[in-house]
Image (cartoon, rainbow, N blue to C red; front, top):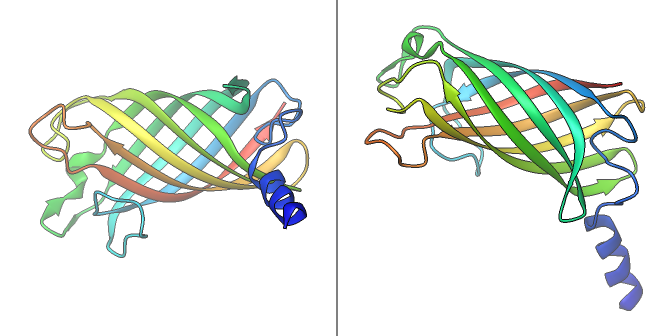
Amino acid sequence: MRKSALFLLSLVIPNIAINPFMDKYENQMFYGIGQGFDTGILLPPPVRPVPFYIGTITYSQPTTFFRIPARKSLNISETLGLGKKNGWNWSDYTIPIGYITEDIALFRYKRFYMGTGAGVGLQAKENKRLGAKLLFQFKVTFGINITKEWATEIFIQHFSNANTADENNSYAFYGLGLTHNF
């Protein structure tokens, strides 16, 4: 029983000697795209995709969060809305977003890793869906290291104004990205 518990614990606690996001590299670029969903929640997975997309470019550096491997990032995203669906004119939500984030490693096993993160930023303009320029971001990432320099990540991302305005219908995205460590 003890051996099983220790084995499971070793899977859940990240190896603090190596950052699973970036290995031993000092810089990382992430390029990602995502599909929008008309929901305020991320889990269980939403089933109503809408004509709303996100493209993201991120620059990251390694850090730690209470000795847990992490990465701090500067992010620039562009949302793209096309047409109407579910009572929303998604074309009104083509808006650039700039934000800072920190992701922490939750799990590492061989080439696979999982992380979660949060951030804060601004969208270029207020709109009816969120009602504020100030945004808060939450993200869950599942990744696989292809090589030490390259990885691919699946992400679940949520933006809202954390009820700082009257409207808070949020943005939710599921996406895929590629990271390059250097």
